[in-house]
Image 1 (tube, one colour):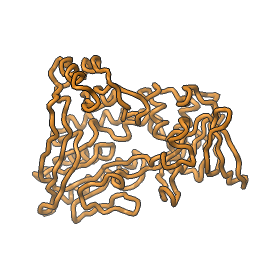
Image 2 (cartoon, one colour):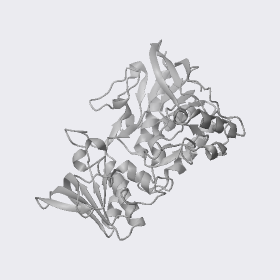
Image 3 (cartoon, helix red, strand yellow):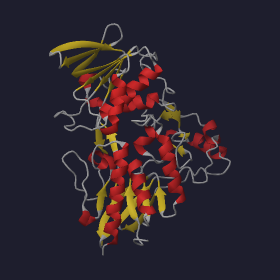
Image 4 (cartoon, helix red, strand yellow):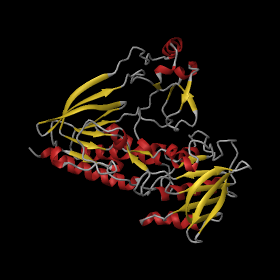
Length: 417
């Protein structure tokens, strides 16, 4: 059935947005899927492995991307943002702005442009942990599979060389931002999340000590396409660590930072502890936690980690991290079970930072009801529905279920007069 002549607008093409778009389209709706990045996949595309099976996330993403490409009811816009919206009848009139398309759709990703480009920039896909060419694929499995160009980073002479190098004339140095206005019947907000800024955790050495990294940085470090080609190492000297400490609830469940639990940080650290042990079997891993939260079948990950030799789980809150005289890191923490303050040492510290909804930081030109922490709530009367981590902190499997529900609610709303 075709529920309406107007499309359903899905904002955000991470796993929740992709799922919502697919479920709505396969149920007969017309869908416009909008993503501000030049590729689809969101945070999931940056993961090394899923828990609990520890399989590559790109496998599942690839299947969903193939479904997107085959479905004529879904239109995808990348490098695009919602810049205005107002109620129009029972739906919405929205304005979408797309950034200049310096590389057109006829790009074949041959790489000739990158061969003549000498300028490098921090790699946003790898969280700025390495340098990449100013013209490049966003990442190896990016879809759309076409190059992007950091236009402002290059000189006019280099831009012209990049244009001339393209054998299919896909480089448009005169590109301009474009806008389009259209009517949509309902909006699904799947704008995802960003990690809590570790720079705010100065007592833990974040942003000051190179060997104190965040959990999302660790995920990229362990990935084969990451900034260290999958090698877990100290950023200060490039050496493999002999002792890694995972600090749970770094800035979470804390009235001075995030008052809530993000629900996935314990599992992410357990998973990453396995990364370390599989790559560096002799490395000692210490996980400092407040509570161990691994619900349902995810408890299998906790059980596996607890049984791994060389992994120690300590119930304790780390309050301070400082450099030690021997080049290592010194941790000051409360050992809850021992009932005393203790000092510990590590070569590499991974901070389990929490999930912050993008809505709490960037916002949207929509009247979206938010809770006190910036997560979205549904507004059925306005035909606005939230999905995934835009609505609450949750893991990938829960996000897909949540997105399916959002699609169903949006389609029902679209059928009403």
